[in-house]
Length: 104
Image 1: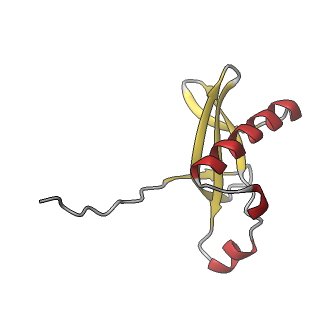
Image 2: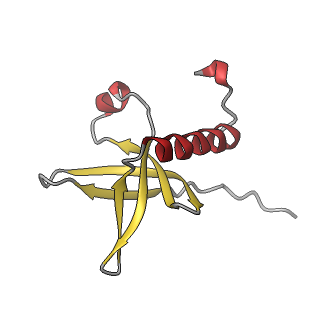
């Protein structure tokens, strides 16, 4: 007899600290590797539900780099590189979450 198993959702959660020491928490939605490097698409997580409702819902896209043998996340400074990566994430996430452009 087949067993009913509940699917567990185990999000990939990371915390980042800015230059002023303020900590932010994100859920990693997707990762892409290309010839240019590795990138993450993330959404912020808030302790206060009101902040979640007020959030724009825009993806935070960063580049994964390495310094002194440790991985770091960097903002993407080149506009062309950012547009290329953002478009790739949007396409992948639309397919994954079955989002239609008219839903936006």
